[in-house]
Image (cartoon, rainbow, N blue to C red; front, side, top):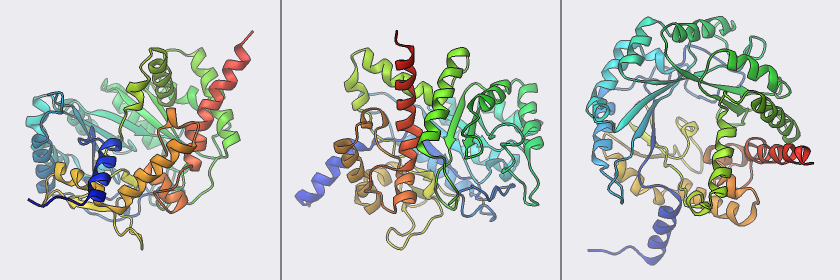
Length: 389
């Protein structure tokens, strides 16, 4: 039996410290195609192409999740299987039903949970039947009222706002709960209250904000940190006045503060990154960031860690420490921990943002860090100081 050199053992040990051995979220790409063309900011490079996932890929992923087994504590963690695209509903109800079938034994055993992130334009009663039958969690992408949602357009360049609202209306008629994610660009960064009033009025169970990022094929302008601080300050004030509405980012910050106050800092610090495997339509596995799917780079190649038709998911994740982009990401996390005062909460910039903003995974701070994490904390500090007697 051969023994890996000391340097390789050390690299594998560092990987095990930072990256969880089992995914809690698996992203499935049923088709690269999207029925819309939000060219102003969409990061998906293959959204105009039909590349449909074969059932064999879904079967291989389901088999991989079955073989993962319990963790070191003897527990079987529930895995979220998130259907993402392209526009996942563009694959059609019949094809999606076929892709879901291999997961049914796992779902019946309570070991997986399905979710979908959709632009909602294709939602009809057939889709609602599917969501209810398979107990889907539904997330809708909508950027606010019509003027702030105008960049979500169809292939003829027409705003899709009315169709998105129609899909949301159908979910509400059928009693299907849903969350929303809004991309906040330079046009909406100064309108936190308007955004929250509108999104809360839709009846969403949770509101999430993605302050516009530079990633994939999106190279547009991004809000500046000072603007982001103003946005989060207004969001905190709005949330205080509307305590029944959940805001994803404030929930995360509140969870961190609650853990610290409970004297359980070690629990938070022990957090490891989900390997976040994204399963491309052809079975290729990309780790750490769904935004890397379909991207090619002169230095990193295609970011593919393996293929589920050839290897099980557990084996692919276990050997991920051999991939240059994964080891660089770990180096970047260590550098963040050593240099950034926000690391305790932030836990380091995401892999995709490091790459798309800085050109390397070994980098540290990104604009995403500043506008989505640092200025959120600064806004809370500002708010607290104002409230002090």
